[in-house]
Length: 490
Image: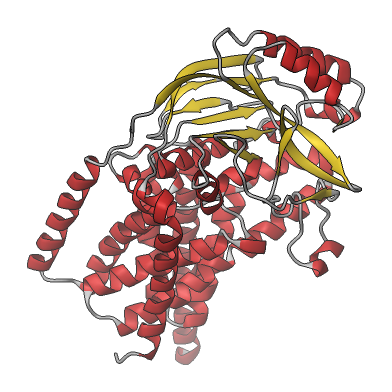
């Protein structure tokens, strides 16, 4: 009986510990997602990473750490991507399938992070060394998560810090990966302070170095000079259900033409939403002719485009065009053929463009492309002096997606030191300064034209010039840190 009692007590204790761990991970994952949902409280994300690091390290086995990491990632991405549910009115149950598939896939990032973190903790005893290696490994996973066929460039730790002075300025030097690294490093230093108990002299020295770094970053110029130009951003607010029904094309065009006609004299460039002009270009070129007659501004506006039997998501400028190159994961393309049996994309007929090029001096990005920092940097590097985003967030009306989209997009302005114009059908449309600050913004669901004098900037930031190499350095540094820890001595 005594043996049974001891067994029961141990079993109950283990159950209680498991429940406690589950609650802590659940709360910390929700805390990390909150800044993405409400666009406030960025340091809550950093604090949740501190808790996650400590929980991953304290797991008794690698398997347990992997399970805890995967659970953390699952909850975080499930909440952060909850806006996908709004697609059920268009895609039905496929929206839930896509949401679950995306969440299950992206959660693998924290599974691998948890395993690598345990290796780093066991093999690198130095407080600073372990913290740097952890931050590098974390950002390397985020970089991998944002590239090629598996690209989902949302949910990065850097995104909520777009307003966090002076940290956001580091994005002009190393983009969002650099900003993620700094935030992850601070979180790692705090977590490993409790795990490794470093000497106070070392803590004081590192704290002083961080303060000096923040002071130096505050002097980085995020408002370069340039020639002045008046620009306009058009928001049409066309209901997606009515748009897809195809019976309001005249009303859509009349609304668009009225808004284009409201662009004031002296405006050099006017940006319109994604696929705003009814029909397919060049069959609808007569509509573009009418719109161009309604304003003296250079009008750049979206339409579907057909060529050689393929359909492209494009923006048109007086016969010139830019095709969307980076199709949305699970929305416009499925990365692996076997998944196509289970998941159906919303726009399976779309073809990706083949060239990343500016239209004149404007770097055009269509919808989800604005989340790809290296892609945006590549176009700016080809001579673009301003960034414009043409989007249609009406797909996600009633969700946090429009706000998250604008929050993420603002980092492109900081990284490249460019004014950014964002035109969305439903909202949010905005004019953003090169420091990422919102100068003007629409409300959701309104018809409006925003106008502002901005600067056409020629100077390139360090990230614009060398962002590929800084990103590669962080990627290799993170992978090398884990390899070093794995093969090194205890």
